[in-house]
Image (cartoon, rainbow, N blue to C red; front, side, top):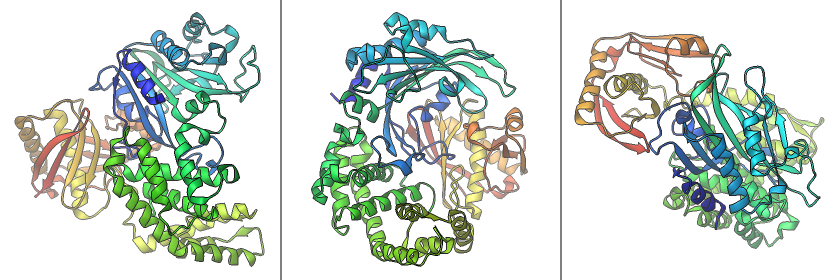
Length: 583
């Protein structure tokens, strides 16, 4: 049975409910490009919001991390990966969490206990040494010599500067043919971390005061790719059953053995898998020069260049064959893969064709330019020319240069790139801020209206309503919010009436900048406070609304016109959606 299925079934047997994987593009957090961990979509619930599925949760989560993108090509790194996780929201704590982790590893996965070691939090001036976790491990059969106490940098978790926090216990596996040592040395790379259990036992205030939480949470995480490699006894992740079909397809298309072209095959396999999941996401990401679209373009183009290095005919349907192999493998776990299969293939083909038209010329131009170099650094003008004329992301130019033992003036490139942006787009392309994709007159009005709608829902429905996302066009607004029930007709009518009452009152919209901590103390609302900079922008609308936001907004609510709710529907578990217009 697949590792994901074993994991889900085990924790369901322990009273957990399986929750669906969140999208790879966050629905309710515009401050990051992708979901990077299983716990990221659950932050509101770990902070106290009730989860509609209850207090014991389990899932496998699609994750994308870009911090290691440049080292993909080695045996262990990936941009996309799957994370297994189980959570307790104020339910069970250390005893059950540790015991079940141990049971799953030793009884279900049959890992010998002598190949396991653990770390626990050594404590500090605020929080005592975690002898409780250590004691549980000893009781389960982990020898004292295989337990290490580590400090804040290794075994402590907190979301930002303040909030829920606590020590964690990490589980390590002896991944080596060498005899297992009698003593556990966390600095020895042959011990590989496979599971992390975080115990959110305390709360740290903005003043640094640590107090014990009345409701304690558990958050765990285990990477699928790493654990499968361990279970299958290989030290190259790309040689596991997860990658077997994809690598075989690349070998078949190229006519080259994996052993003779490992780096390029790993990059093609990894980058196309990640591209499949980004393109299949319901957020509708397409290759572009900004944000998630830029990452998607960079991944596809890097895969194309490595396909060319394997002498694959890049004008053939090679990318469709590989992507189809990947989608066949994952479609039974992630419904959007099958639903958006044709979209994925179309996105890959269009970007391939676009890049193919200029790739050959661009590579020749690169070779010509470096043959004239007087130094070991490619000038900014050349790097920008390759980008502007041949569609080479700066990272591709850097990679080509690195292969030649030279560098690129990336700082100069960024200056030229920003100048180009300013001229060609006149500021119209910008990072989405709170769902605002433009700053025209109607988008500005709708953005202000989302603040009023958020405030009205708190009055009419519940003070615990929070914005979970928004999407704005010049024609309408879409607003997602936390709510455990379908709104009644009376609730919709009252909400609409209250928004219109505030519009007619002609309330001033005041913008101020202040330190983040001061903003929160003043009552300004924000779900993901730790992701904001130290100085934040706060928009206040009369006495009815105060939120951290990127703007822009109207100066007075009287500019908005009449607000009308068109539709109220379910968005996802515990999240409702309102579509509305200004008339």
